Image (cartoon, rainbow, N blue to C red; front, side):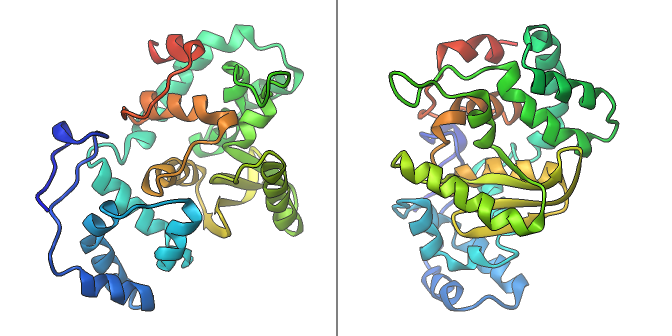
Length: 276
């Protein structure tokens, strides 16, 4: 397969030429997880093969590529995102704070929710960008309230939209219970749980951070790395944004990463944000 440049790709993704000798590398990856440097080399070589496969659900994709279930599997997600969007990989690090500051100034006067106002007070006392990030993420749905509906009679709440990105638990012993709660809630709506960040502790002083993807928990030491990986995992795994938070992911996709795809369905109430 010949390489497909970004300008001619339907999704705006660069697709490199396929190496005709990747079949052995695919088989190797299905039965080996060490040495890790060789995993990385073979993973990168087999990228075109993955792009040409019908991916199905996230669970099916993870079953096909079980190396992603390794505790270091999140590094492979980063590699694939770099292949998909070569010049976009560092955009969360480059553009998040500028985007959030502009959004905050534009929308903060409209915030009336008591919980959100407390978050704003807390945010004003934080200095380190990485410590600010979980609070900033938690504020998004209050700065830009959801307009979508679960049904004709039930609208998504700001807290439901927030849980599409971040779920908080205070104790290590409650982590599995928090994950199961998300699964049960999704199952009651005939949905599946999409990737999310699980934060243990206080938003401003967390003791652990995980990316939860199906039954995988990747532990990250940095909030910035965690939320960057969260977004990238949706594109690498071809996962659908959660209904409650889809509009927030689209804003981040467009305004922070600078990514536009032919699948984007922009709800009217975020157009002014995209035009900021």
